[in-house]
Length: 97
Image (cartoon, rainbow, N blue to C red; front, side, top):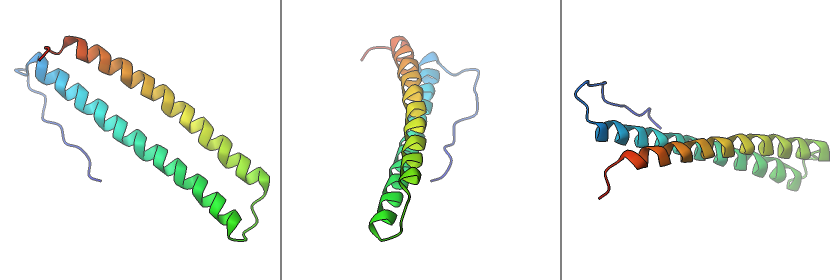
């Protein structure tokens, strides 16, 4: 995935253009969080598949991965709430269609 490109800051930018850029940045943050969630799911699948393939994972290892994933998902949830509040604030100022 390539890095997003935003236009150079323009002092003549309208309020609506600025708010649209903020919404775009929120969408990109949401996309990044979805990649993190997907990676955590793959981590769980990996450790469980190792266990099913005969590789003996200690229960402590599985619980450690579970605890790690749980902690990261709690942080993602907090970030989601912040982004939701940011989006709601921006939407208040955008003109209604």
